[in-house]
Length: 266
Image (cartoon, rainbow, N blue to C red; front, top):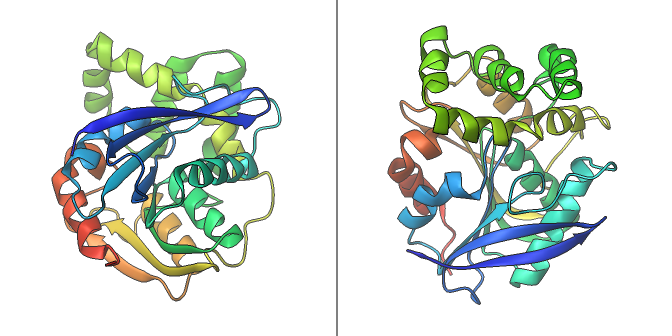
């Protein structure tokens, strides 16, 4: 389906959140919450490939244009509150989907409000990112976004030097990554703003967790996935064969088909 409208919702603290809506803008459907180093545009290929819901609303979380600033009081609870505003203004959701950090936000939201279904792709939780947090802080304080991108891609994602060099060689791609790097330290630090919950998504009727086959059982994404899954013992566990953390960019059609297969009818 094609994008039909972009909505803008004030969320308090002088900030706001935009939402790209595909399909029927006034009919609740699938709501997508991207994670760190990602924005609504990065999920366009998945949104346009999905047909199981009458609408797909992709949240552009605060800290990435054209949404508003992070603000000084930013925390994971800020994200959950922002998502609550979006869900209320959209009239709810049939399915809430979150990727990575966005997956954790979605699961936390399902602790605070009843939701029919939550799907999370490789959600992260502490101690994810703890080893690089001091270096992310130093890079953030120095406003060195190049360093943030390097830390994320080499030390967290584990990409080799050749791949990162290829990204740097494309000025347009690298500048886009630099823009997305701006909120990374605040988002990673937010994982440590309060103790990790013992359980997640307690008010969701159904929870489905997806792990990429290439990451299953391996750090950091596969092990963080296991940490989350242990907090949602009733969740269905699913694997996207051959894929890693960036399936929405590398295999959007395959990810869309799996999401559709998990869609709750009605």
